Length: 118
Image 1 (cartoon, one colour):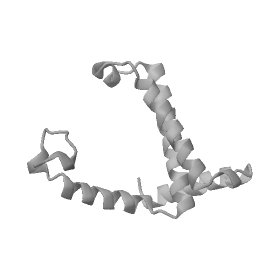
Image 2: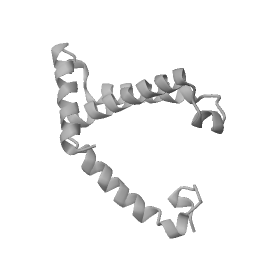
Image 3: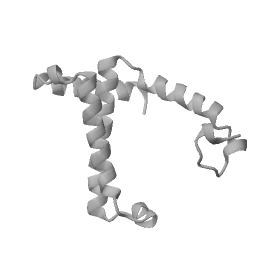
Image 4: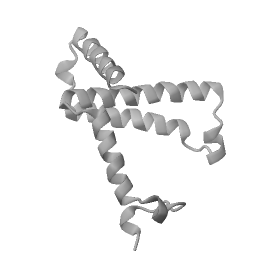
């Protein structure tokens, strides 16, 4: 996603909230809680599925997952906008940190946390 596309989405979401006078409710705390709820609703779609079933969703479940992913992104964009976080830069920075914590030649095929390596 380009910086321009991300900014346009954030502006659209801010305008959506402003038109409904919801800015008063969009504190970082409330947005973080809403993000958590939406992430839980996404997780619920996969609850009790096998690994294979989770890879081969039927059309109805796929659509529900698609819309839950949208909800997660919406709240993520809102909280980053409210807090003034450049989300693309934050992602780039985090990937660089993860590359240091998890060098490919050391961790390939191993899912342990970086603190569990000798």
